[in-house]
Amino acid sequence: MSALLWALVALPLGAGVLLLVVGRRADRAAPGVALAVAASALGLAVTAAFRHPSARAPFLDGLPMRLTVDGLSGLLAVTVTAVTLVVLLFSAAEFGSGEARARFFGLMLLFAGSMLVTVTAATLPVLLMGWEVMGATSWALIGYWWRDPERTSAADTAFLTTRTADLGLYLAAGAALASGAGPTSYSSLSLDGLARADEPWLSFITAGVVVAALGKSAQLPFSFWLSKAMRGPSPVSALLHSATMVVAGAYLLLRTGPLLDASGWGDDVVAWTGAATAILLGLVAIAQADLKQLLAASSCAQIGFMVLAAGAGATTGGTLQLVAHAAAKSLLFLAAGAWLTALGTQQLPALLGAARHHRTVGTAFTVAALSLAGLPPLSLWAAKDVLLAGALERSPWLYAAGLAGAFLSAVYSAKALWFVWRPAVARPDARRIPAGAVWPLVLLAFACVALVVPAFPPVRDSVSRVLAASGQPAPHAWEFALSAGLALLAAAGAWAWGARPLPLAARAKAGFADWLGLERAAHVLLVAPTMRLARAAAAFDDRVLDRAVEGSASATVRLARWTDDVVERAVDGTVGAVAAGTRALGRWARRPQTGQLHQYLAQAVAAFTVLAVVLVLVR
Image (tube, rainbow, N blue to C red; front, top):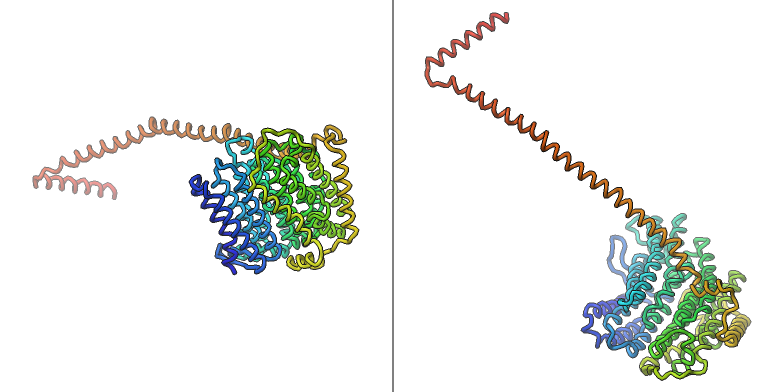
């Protein structure tokens, strides 16, 4: 059983590293290798989801490396590998042959493997390993076209923002160790054991996990990094921002639900942060004129529902939302990428008639957009109501906030559809979308329809049992009807409104279009003070420390010269005088040594005479 789990994480990681090491020489074979590895990983993930294997290997003294697959991680592993396979199928057909394919597919596999490590990790250290590699590979993928300074700058922004939030996991790990029996005990670092910590460590652990999760999932106030991440290739956005990186934080919150509940405050903070993100980023999505920016803001908003579910304890609804969103959002990003390749633009006004020009892509995009809007009988309609039932049981105000977010979902989805389905304009320079890039979109469209089934009994009850989430609230018929009615009303209103400007003040529209000014606020509150502190430290180093070192060196040189001029001369004179005196004494001592016996006798008589006189005088 452990071999199955090791193979699941090692196969994509090993293949990804191999493609990166071989480099451009593997460009021709890279798509085939990546597809074979992704298909094998999907088969292993499905098997692991049924068998629930666990694995352990020596790591540190008293702290082994532990991986495990349970209901939640099993569903996530299948979702990650399935979306990875579909995205790689699209990329193999659409990604230019002149590109560095080995690097691209190697990074994609390495990223998927690190996400699988994150999903199956049973302890915080293993989770951190996957978390860190996932962040590093996401930076490399977002900045894949590294010769463009804007893309590399966007990758840096995304990486530094999530990296700052990731420090929360280190805080959580340190607090967990401090709350345990000692540094050699690993029970305190188990994800299942975090909720057993005592105060104040419990609050530190909760705060660290919440900050890291919100940062990785682009929730308020970290949402702006996802806007920058849209500079990456569309297949990267489809993988990173649908089923992997941005949902990793939501998964972590769903996984650590008992910790949020035990803290006494974590569940409320998480639930209301998710609701606020669903509403505010929904407004941001409505204000966008760029299709990928609209989809990015909608990702933040839709993940807000998953975060809300984690805070409300609606594990089943949050998981269903995560899986359904993965299918819909990966399809939307891939379709946007196909249109970008074919038409050379992702601006909504320039995409008028794009769905009419490419009918199959347009139809698949429509299915995903209607699912995102929450229209029946598609997957996100029912999944959202399952999680909102948990919000209603917790607080009617939380439920109302969730409905408001769902209403906005229909508005921005209908807005995107309005543009792409308007009467087509002549496009003589339009490129043909490869057939191999179209049918993965069709597969995802079917998934958007089929995934509505798990949201209803008896499949929903089975999902709850698999997730070990007993006592989950079930939505009533009126809740399904209410959300569907609101979605229809919002979509119809958005369609009728068309491309007319939003009825808001100019400053408000600019604020929503600029992602609430979150990046500028981060620069004002964090980046600028940090840079000022760095400049002050550099000035202190140059003007104080450097001058102190240089002054000390100068004083040492002057002391050495004075020593050479004064002390050395005195010492040399003393040594010379001692040597001269010694030589003089030696000459005087040699004079009595004549070798004649009568002289020695005379010397002895003289010496004894002097001695006798001294003795007489002393007495």
